[in-house]
Image (tube, rainbow, N blue to C red):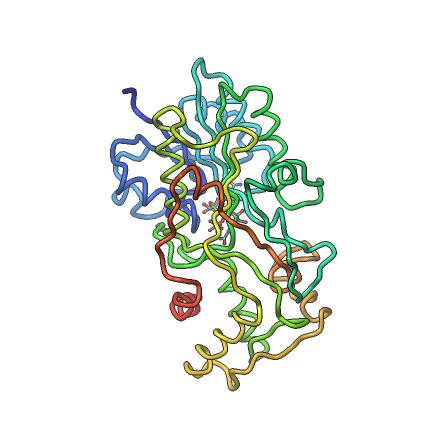
Length: 335
Ligand SMILES: NC(=O)c1ccc[n+]([C@@H]2O[C@H](COP(=O)([O-])OP(=O)(O)OC[C@H]3O[C@@H](n4cnc5c(N)ncnc54)[C@H](OP(=O)(O)O)[C@@H]3O)[C@@H](O)[C@H]2O)c1
């Protein structure tokens, strides 16, 4: 069988770094090339035989040329960068034989940030099987949608030559295994805002819920898809319907705030463990360093509820990692 050649991006990131580490240790037969803007100290010693291409997502010719040498592109990092997606796909389309494109997305695509109900439970739980027609025709304002359209258009036009899959992940928790960033997004942001206020918080009833996945369980989805690609597609679904949620559990904002309050109060970081209700304006004023005006709402007041039906059905996905609450003590320590 020919060598499996993987081109991986985002390899210094929390998720991409863990993908690299997982592949390096668990699939030593795969040849891996990474795109790095800067080589971290000790990278080559830690990952000998991993080929490095120095470049940025904006270096379209380089990305295309490198993708053209791979039979599997695993793209992560800045999920919404359109030019890099076009470059990968253009590169893969030059190959004379079938190749695979696996892109990391996020359940921001189903988040109810635009109209709410902020701080309240939205009863809609999305299935990546039952709701696939809606998921593949979301409006352009949905987060990730412009990039997903590019991928799904390629899947429709050239689906036999470029087999696409989108890993649409819920919020990830747990310590990453990469060399640079090993922390996810939500817990550090939540921790930072709690420290500023002196107490954990929610808005509305705090009933808004988001899905969660441990980084180790997320790696099970990655490995299953990459292994399937390595044997020509396997049992995985590719193309327009190659859309995989990853969630293994849900938690409401009030549940998260209650758990964080107990941990941080016991640690002496805050003076009260009791979560407090903030106004929607106060939540909206939390920019979290982003220029997107909905960032506070999206992070603390929205619902992103998803069931990983496709991974369970086609990839035999069986989550095994500890829950978001079991990991919160450590995740808030790391924050
Ligand atoms: N963490 C979560 O809970 C979660 C859940 C669902 C979806 N996502 C999405 O998945 C993506 C990755 O998440 P993450 O937590 O792994 O992020 P992260 O730790 O910030 O990693 C980002 C990676 O992308 C690379 N990168 C970004 N812009 C680049 C560019 N222009 N050229 C080359 N490399 C570039 C970074 O490289 P440098 O080291 O050079 O900066 C880094 O390797 C994000 O878009 C995020 O929104 C995250």
